[in-house]
Length: 134
Image (cartoon, rainbow, N blue to C red; front, top):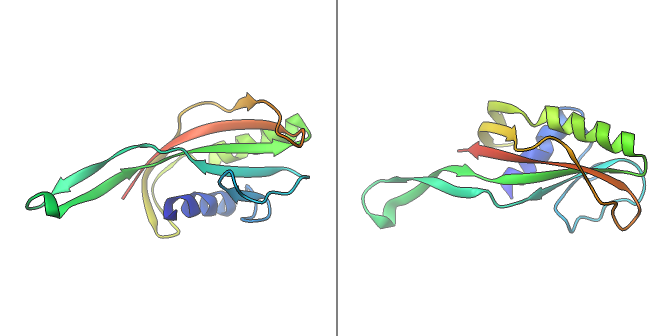
């Protein structure tokens, strides 16, 4: 959860929106039905890299690699695409501390792409990111 909050904070710091007003965490977030919003969902990632320091009881995950999907939504397709692009640019960085998480690397796995409209008829433009963090 700390990593998710850190990604939300990075988006806010880069002017993409405001947490819990226009930027939301997860698929179960209570998101408004109007306006342009961004949701960030954890998508798993790959297994952490581990350091062995004296037996199985002392194995520590030192490098974690979570991944996320970022989705911009708006009734207007151009607004959704522009917001996705703004988030896309904001989520390309390395060697940065955000909200207590040290990110070694954050990079997109894809270009922004269109998803089907949501239940409220809003256009959705999404992309996925992979991350490496301590």
